[in-house]
Length: 102
Image (tube, rainbow, N blue to C red; front, side, top):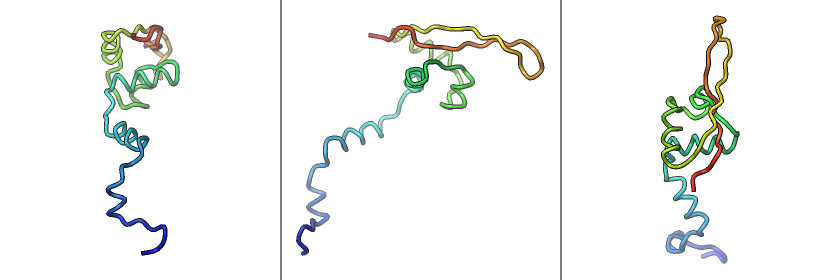
């Protein structure tokens, strides 16, 4: 056997470093949709239904906001009115976090 060479059997017995174990746990844990929405709002400041669908693949943003409110989060809901491609006015909401749950 070469000097400094460790066989696969020995490496299999050694425990992986703690950071590797935590990373594997986090990778195997599937995030709930409302957690993805919350992370997006924390990272970018706010979210709309269109952004939620295109960026996160989540269709029902108001329901996810409602579930987060049940957990104690408070959101600011800013109505935005714009014209659509047909020239009609349409209103949607931009959600941002006001108070985090304790």
